[in-house]
Length: 79
Image (cartoon, rainbow, N blue to C red):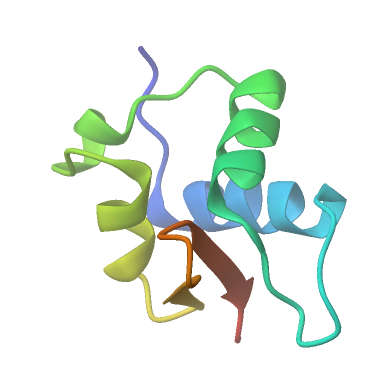
């Protein structure tokens, strides 16, 4: 598995977020963002010391994560 620089990772996840369906506040389903990112480039969150995509994204100040009432996770880019 290829390891990306943080800038490349941000670009990959940012592009996946832009391609995903977003609500009026700009939040997209984290699972859709992950699927789109994997479709573009094969990457593993474990390469960045994270156990899950949500853990990885929560550690990136460029993204905001919120939980839905049903327990799903939404993400939006804030910078």
